[in-house]
Picture 1 (cartoon, one colour):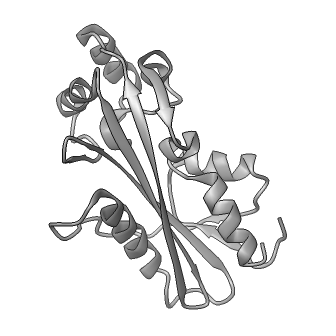
Picture 2: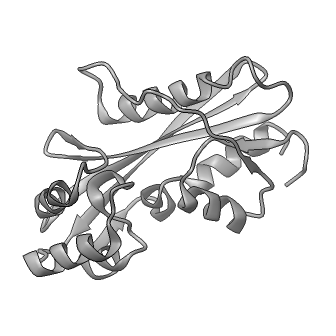
Length: 190
C-alpha cells in the first residue's frame, strides 16, 4: 500500500489497529468524541453504518487529502441490539443470551476522502455452544469486556472455547472487515 493519501484511523480499538498493521497499512490514530446514539427503527446494518458515518462526519472540516476510516461493530440477536455492556452483571447477561445460539455481527465502515463518504458494512453469523455460568462469569471477571459489543472478543478465551462456527468474515467479528476495507482503499489509490 502506498503512503499517499495518508490514512487516519478514527478508532481507539486496539483490535482495529492490529488488523491494519497486519495488513501493512500505514496509518495514524486520531480520536474525536462522538455521540453514538441512533434513531429508532433502523436495522442492525443501518445502525452500524449510521454510527460509523457520524464518526467520519466529525472529521469533515479537518482533513484535506487524508482518508479517514471509521467503523462501528454491533451484535444482534433475536431482534435485540447488544452494544457495549454497562457493567459486569450486564456483560454476564449478554453472554447468557448469546450462549447456545446464533447471533449476527455487523460492522459498518465509512471512508471519508475529499468530502465523499464511502460507506459499506459486513455481516457475519456466529454460533456459540452452550456456555456454563462459571465459564461466563470467570471470563467477565478476568477479561472485563466492557469495550466490546456483545461482551466478548472472538480472539479471547470465551471466543476460543465457545464459538462453534462462523458464517462470514472472522475479521468482521473482530471489528473490521479487512477484505472489504482493503478493496475500498485500493479504489482510493492506497
